[in-house]
Length: 531
Image 1: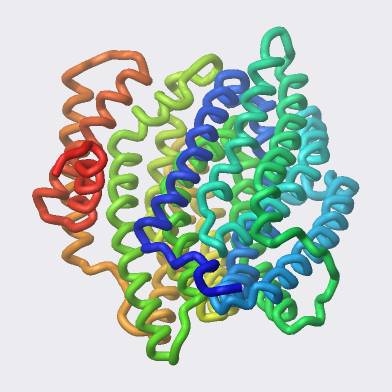
Image 2 (image 1 turned 180 degrees about the horizontal axis):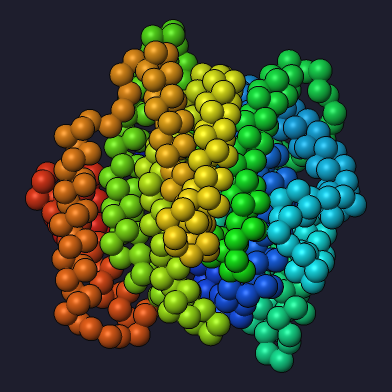
């Protein structure tokens, strides 16, 4: 294979923009899916059962899926592609696919059989019909989770060849399948019956998500040669890297399950309200943190040269990526805090989801903003370790985070509301706040460690302050606009208020001469045909 056959590494902005667009498409359809789900199920028992059940097969997906493969498979595979070792790269891809399919098949089978034990472990507060429904939904969804793991393998191959768009838009199929299932069967069905149909639709969507990626994957690989050649040198490297990341992802997932465990003891609606808030909270994490990290990992992993040269490349790309993430996440934090009620109402307020539910979810969302910036920046720092083939250091820091999340989450969710004399259901907001505090501790450890390895990396304080000033000015104006225009429909209100917020943020950022804002305006002007 000649050198020209290997795509040139994209710039941070280009690669991240493509990933962000793909994630945006998936997340927008995900928000539509959440709105349709909220319309039919609100904060009722069926919503709690479905959203709690969704966490269990997602555990499988997150353990074996994108995060683990990004840290273990992509650095090895992308490095081989960068060195034009195409035959060996294809051999590694085939072996990893085979081993993954074998392991996941066994885990899915065991998961279906042992589902009641999982329910007792993560949602002991569920009893009677609520528990039985959750067990049924988990059993239906487990095979779909196995398919999503294979989808993550497809993503690893595509990303290593800088084919980001397909891999990150494939998730649209999963959302569309569920939306179609709810709308097609929603009329005249009981909530119990409809939630089961929605679960089967999610499995169908998982299959579609894999199928749309396979043709391009096969083309890039020149076909797929499956094997269990786990003794090959590069396959052993993938396996060796896999286990620390697997444990690390498991530790992080344990943190999420601790939240679900604690929320299950709170009044009905807490589990589903937490899930609704997390759908919004994870949007900027995915759009900005994941997009930059996903675009950078294969490029940083393919960096060649002496140790100082590699460190210089990583330092340059990480500093640029950290600025991009900060520029977009800080206004997300301020927006959720100041305008969260507008956002939640526009997306969820419909049918069984009332205005009182909007205020409840907004409170949980506000708590989530405590750690939003740390979580998104932390993704890129972790990618820096993975590019250096270090999967163990992020694991140690993840364990610290989980221990803190467990202790602080318990105190904030259960004893603290009683001590403060507030409603027990607000304990779920305590969960999100405590998780945010733990995220900042992990972020600090990640940053200090990477600085010792490659030099000064981080966001300049002056730049950070300017972004905060722009976001706060824009939020104040947007909140004032909300008062002036008065009562409107939730969607119309959101379009007006959020447009004011976004335009003013970019306007103030441009006046402050922030390069990120000027670059975005330059792109818009060029596309509009202006000089």
